[in-house]
Length: 419
Image 1 (spheres, one colour):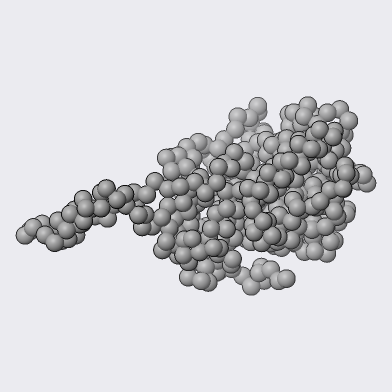
Image 2 (spheres, rainbow, N blue to C red):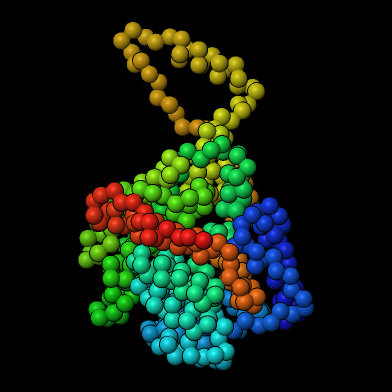
């Protein structure tokens, strides 16, 4: 136990050194990671609700923390329950009904990783039972449910943390620091893509389990690419700009996976912010060439935040080729053949980029679970985290609405958070 605790402290210390004091102090949701522990910390007793693939991934991080005891877990799909039981051990109680788990007084907090349509009512029930809650993104499948989750957290005084791990990722924290320092100049456009080449479908043991297992493909349970993927990048876009979009337009289709799914397999959106900056989001399920990336662009450079690379807009040329460049430019711009083209195509920037950090292995999930556990131990909320998760959810749902209704939608006043 002591050895594990020392390793954990060294891990947090390493995170703090990589992140830097400025980032840790300016991003309020990181404050639980700076908590000083006197001796061995008290053990936090957790319950798990929803232990499918994502729930078990979060559990793996929790089990690595010696200050955590998982006392109960719940799922209404037997295969998930069995796999989770193998992870957490025989001392934890298994449930198929989350309301029974919430009756356990010893549980201080719950981690919710159910399908999207289950988030709101389970979260609100847990908060009203006095539990702190970690809920996976997106928050809910409707604007109203999302707001009611926020209100429940505020009314009960319990922490509700939403699973946006990029808030705890070194490469995104470093990127935000560079942006705030003006390394890119003012941000004039953000572009993000999340491309895959797969049907997102899982095998089912019997047809009656189709919607239960492939819930991401049906509108009763999910908004597909918007709530499962786009919400991550929308959170980062809001974070970069320090504001939320006021107008959203876009188009979505099912143009390849015509297999009975109800959610789009191809989406394209433009989010317009009050500052005048546009966030352009693009996601397809039939081509993975350009993968997952978010590009923040300004007059001085471009930052690719998923891969943590920075590109100067006007990189200094190597001294040995200055004369050659001057000659090429002279030939291009001084001589235009009669009858030839009156323009020259602009080639992409040839800067190969530089890495802004070598901390590329973690996606931030380890740190976000650490922060949640510490917030439970200290019995306090994590400043700013819930607001980030809420605004990302509303943005993703409004994007879906814009595509479904084929119109420009605006952020309704009643769903703008007040302090």
